[in-house]
Image (cartoon, rainbow, N blue to C red; front, top):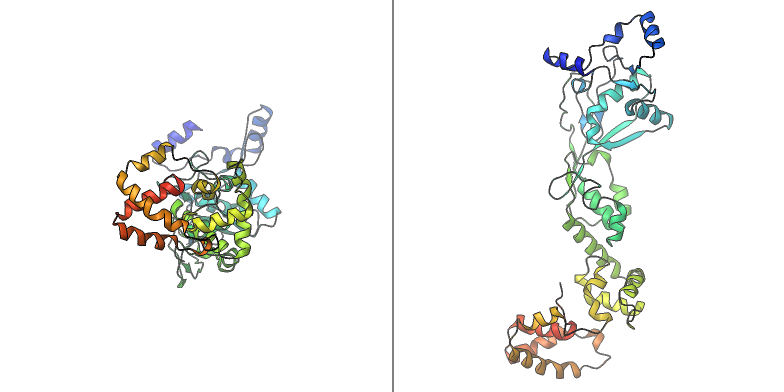
Length: 381
C-alpha cells in the first residue's frame, strides 16, 4: 500500500489507492482467500448514491469535501472488525439517534458518513460539529495539561452552576436563521452561516441560572470559533453566584453547611468552627470569597489564634515606622474597647477607625497595615 501511495503521489494524483482489487475476478478473489491472503472491505467511492449536500447545525451549509478523504475508505479491517466510520453509522441508526454532537475535527469525515447512510439507505441524524475548547495560551485542551475533568473543578471548589454558566457562555454565539442549500459542488471549505440574525450572543460574563440556560439553549447559536476558557471569567461568575447564594438566609445556611467539614479539617482544635461561626465569617469576608475554599484560605484568623511571630507577620511590621504603629494602636484600642458586644454586629468599623486616623494624621496605607497586623497577623489577599 505504501508503494501504491508513493507511486500515485509521484504521478501528481491526490488519490491514496489505485482500486487494484476492484477489478479482480471472482476466481482471483477465491484463489487469494484460499492462499490465506489478508483482505479488507472498502467503499467504492466512485459509485455512491446521489444525496443532499452536507448541512451542519452549527456551521450551516458545507461543501462536499471528498478530496480530503482517502480513496475507497476501508469499512472492515483485516480482522473483520469495522472501522469507526461504519460502526458509528450503524450504531447510531440502531439506537435511534436523532442528533449527533461531536468535535469539529470530524467535519472532514462528515461527507463519508453521509455517503454511508446513503449506501445503506438510512436516514441520517442531524449533525452539529462543536468547535474545540482551548487553553488560555491558545493550545488545545488535553487531559495531559491542566484541569479538563469535571472532578478537577469539584476538587477546586467551583460551583457546578458557575462551571455550567462558564462553559455555556464560552461557546455561545449569535443565533442565525439556518437554511440548507442544494449546492453539491466539491470543495474542502465550508460556507459561512446563512440567514438573518435572530439574536446576538450574550455578554461573556452574564450570570444565568440553569433553567435560564435550558430555556435559551439553541444549537444554531453555538459559535463557529474555537473558544478559549478564560479562568478569570470562571472566578467572576463563581464569585457573583456565591454572592447570590449568601444573600438569602437559606443560601447562607447551605453554604456554611457545605464548608463545615473543610473548616473542621483545617482547624481541628478550634472552638470557632460551628455553622453559626462560619456564617459570620462568610459575611465578614464577602467580597474576598471567590471560591468556597477561600473561607479557609482567607479566613484562618477567624478560627485560630493569630501568630504575630510568623515570618509574614514580621514582614508586615518592616513596612511601617515604629512610631506610626504605636500611635495607631494607642488611638484605635480605646475606640474598640468602647464598643459594646451588642453593637459589634452592625458596627461600621472602618468609618469609626478612619476618624482616628485623620486625627493622628497617619498615612492611610500605613494605618491599614497596622490594623491588619493587629487583627489577623497576615496579609489579606
